[in-house]
Length: 310
Ligand SMILES: *[C@@H]1O[C@H](CO)[C@@H](O)[C@H](O)[C@H]1NC(C)=O
Ligand SMILES: *[C@@H]1O[C@H](CO)[C@@H](O)[C@H](O)[C@H]1NC(C)=O
Image (cartoon, rainbow, N blue to C red; front, side):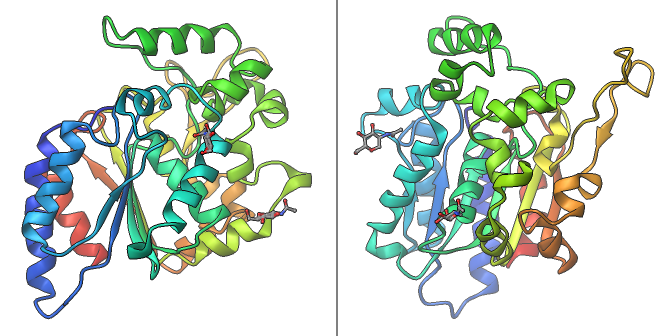
């Protein structure tokens, strides 16, 4: 979802505190950002975000990931496309940028967060040092979010996804379908979903040990959840939480409210399938909260969390 302007003020304060904490740092580490659904790599919000960082952190190199240099097409690629192919294309894009050769920090907004995590697990060349994700869907979504009025692309994608989220066409062409995870249809999800079960190493006989090795090579993984998020269902997905499957009568174990399986009780965590447990036990997974709606990044939220990453 679109980045809101509140972030600008927040980031200014963040980078002020970073640069004053490292007055002797000659060249700040480059930064790569991957925008969220509905945004484009060169949207005003993203460009101003980059500029505000450059203003207070002179000399920093920032790259905004794109799937198409044409902004309209790039926005469309947020809804339509094959995510595995998109992450692969971005890995090539990043490896072609000489400024990133020595590695970089990365910030993923919303779905850009799990895509950057996929980059780390599968490619990580050049390597990511710190990965910060804001309101990302690391354990998938159990509902396709509503669209703003008159957002035709969004409505098209939503209707198609609702029509058959695990169908072959949806899995090739609808981005949200590729991180849709229905807790009451896990076997179908594991069999059909082309993206999320792979990066979460959820499929027993196609586990990839490289993913765990690469993820654990991060310095820090910062997972930011928005406390009033109604776009990401459940919002705990930003912290690797998911709904528990309902019992056989279709009831969830808590009346009126669905039960959340938190990160540390997820099988993929307890079995350390992709390095998350290793990273967490080292103290390098930070679970942070923004007291706000989806993608409303306020200074109150940003300042304390970033001091921990320095
Ligand atoms: C990936 O890059 C190729 C070659 O540039 C392009 O034809 C293709 O459309 C891109 N795919 C995606 C999903 O961005
Ligand atoms: C595991 O992932 C790495 C990195 O993406 C890839 O090069 C390798 O082919 C994968 N291995 C298997 C068995 O799929």
